[in-house]
Image (tube, rainbow, N blue to C red; front, side, top):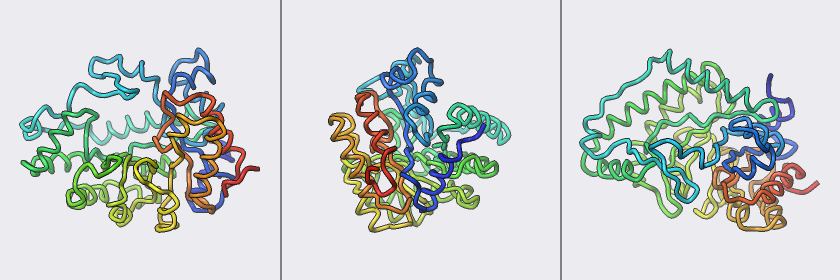
Length: 346
């Protein structure tokens, strides 16, 4: 089985800055209510694939199970519809200093990555293209407050220990992307590396320029050399270092969070065909607006992105969150599918 020709053409045209019939929808779902609406009684992950097909989502980097299923492990807790780890990567600076890497062999990494990718590809095809998001390397590891605190302290007190950890993560990222490139697993890969809050960067621009971007450039090099597009995913306001990211070699950014000041129109005007833009559909309207407001926001997002390809529409939250009304999800997807690439309704 392969992805259908119309989806394949739509995605590849957008990547080449050619005008598709409409902007591709590149979305991830994390909503039990949406799953129940389109795939009632179907277990995860089959419900995710059935829902993507029913809605007409062109591409996904995978969907999440309902949050309640994700906290069943002993090391997770649910807070505000977000699953947080209760087991830090590093409990303190001494744990970081004493870190000794253990790693799979390259062959084991290849077997695991190929197996996981093939399972996802088969799950979502033929109506939805699986585009992986595993091209990053983990500059800020862990999804828990304690690890971030330790990383912050290390930046000040022991950057050498942190650099050794970063180098280890970078080496793993390079190998992983060499495998993706070797097998041409996708035309575009998303590299998840959050570095910003809504109002500011998580660390200083200097730290990013000295430590993040040089390593990031090495990590994405195998993808670039293989002609695979690289989309940098970071929530928040990344404008202070966006020029650095472009110089690093990225091909696009995601999810362009509106409440963080990421103005898709201004970014398009500044960077033109240098950047593929993924996202910027207003998640606040999607969550709290009515159906007509959702449709208006879809049209406004597509107009602001401009015609001529290079735009994938997606919620600026990066996914369809659990608190989004199902009726609004339907209105969002329907408005995109009934519009052309210039953002005008047919």
